[in-house]
Structure formats: structure tokens, C-alpha cells
Image (cartoon, rainbow, N blue to C red; front, side, top):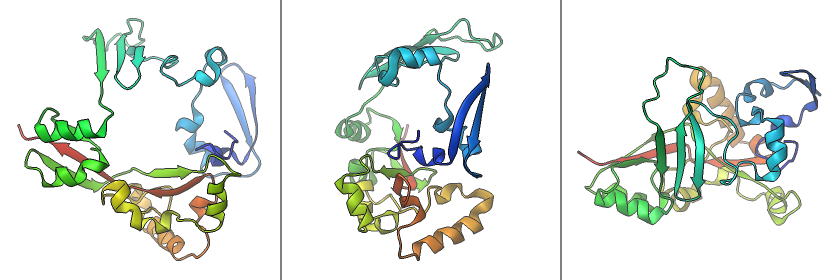
Length: 248
């Protein structure tokens, strides 16, 4: 987590130590107060993994062959990469009042953008959330269904994986950041993306809308590299979501 190329590396920048004082207890000590750390532990930055599971699989954790460690009402079966994920009912689930009427569930999915677009246009696929960017122009003009678009709590973050590579050098020299991505809206996101000034996109400002809007506006006026790009988590864009529905 302290690796600068990690998506969550910046959250652990102020961590001094992590110790285990007892069973079921972990103590994290910070070098200085960190407003984000406590809340972000509820995200992937704070995922707890069984020690023996991680030691058994090592770097393969999270791959199709290993699957997942934990379970809920349903347990992981198999993952056929690019095709399907199978889960089965877990009869040992703690909540006995929850009726588990389905024994097996197969999740199948398409990963080819052209196939998804063709399926939507032909009516073979009823609808989807987040249709292929490359197919948006066709979907917008098709009478086979309706394309919906609106603000969403989505963001795409560009992360520099090699801190010594050419990408880091270009970034230091002023390569396009989150404030100068407007020209990429059309080729990257089919015209549905908007540059984001903060890691938090405007759709989720909530009660802090006025303060965050003001702060975001101030970062746009800065000549220097914005706050979001001095960490490993860099320029962000795509703050709108799209969906497709076929009439029935």
C-alpha cells in the first residue's frame, strides 16, 4: 500500500506503523492527522484478508484461478475468464431467516464492445448500464432503444505505474492533467465525459456542494499542477453515466 504506483498509496503516506495487539484487533499509528484515512478504511484500502489465504496464494490473489476468500449467502464456484462466473448456495450462511430459493447462479457476460453494441441495436440485449463508448454515436441515433445520460459518481483515474519512466517525466513537464482533458472527451468517452478537478466528482458533493464547488473552481485557476496530480492518483475524467433500454 505504500507503493507510490498503488491506487491507494496516497492514503498510507501518513501511516507510521500497523501492529496487531491482540486477536481481532489492529492498531494503526499515523505520522500526522489524516482526515481521509479513517473513512477510506471502508473502501478497498481497508480490506481485511485471511493471513493463511494470502500466504497460500500470494501474488495470485484476485485472479480467476484463486477466486475470492469470503462468502455470503452464496459461495464462489468457478470463474471462466471472459465468459462467466458461477456461484452456489451456501447452506451454512448465518442468517437462517433469509430464504435461499436458488441453488446455483451463472453470471455470463460479454466483453467485446462490438458484440454488445450489435446486441443492443438488434434487440438481442434488452439493456445495459454503461454501454461501449465506441458505440454511443450509433446508439444515440437508433430507434431500437433509448440512450440515457446523466451525472454519476464515476471517475476514471490515470495512475503512473512507473515512477521513473517517461510518463512521470512528461507529467512533471506539464503533460495534460485533469484540467486539460476537455479535448479527449469525444475520442475517449464519446462526448459523455467531463474533466474532474477533484478526486471526488460533483455528482456526490452532497451537503458540501457549495464548498467543494468553490474549491474545485479555485484549482482550475491554478497554473501549477493540481493537488490530484501530485499523488500517484492522477488526472480524472468521465463524471457522467450512460445506459440503454429497449422498449418492450
